[in-house]
Image 1 (cartoon, rainbow, N blue to C red):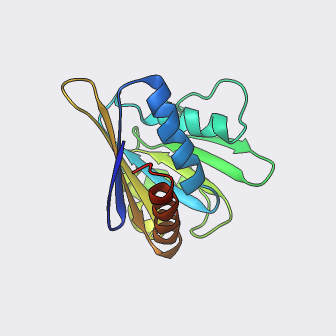
Image 2: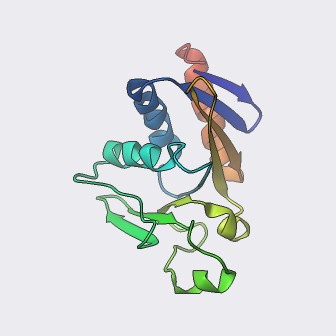
Length: 165
């Protein structure tokens, strides 16, 4: 299911139940404060992964991609989660209208097509999703900054102790 290499973990899944197990790990790693930039081709599963994580965090009802709204906000008991989709952004000036959280805030920002804001958030997770020709989904999750790297190391120790890796 996963492999570890310094500040990168790779997960693979073939079914919805396997993806939900990956989402369970992501839900732990991405707890507030966190910024996650999700990248990958159209239809690779960025929104599906976000939906699974939000469900684990207690969001009820339908979670859809904010492709046309650009940002959906979810008020949770312990934090606020911003789910942004920047696919339609064509110029940096367009980002000025979005009310994205400040770096290192006590919130969670999940950004699909987040290349536009990478430089704004040096403390972040880069989540790159791909699909192999056989249909296998692959998530390469890379930690940047002190908190994400620390969380990844702690998860790695737990995963190793529980024989998850």
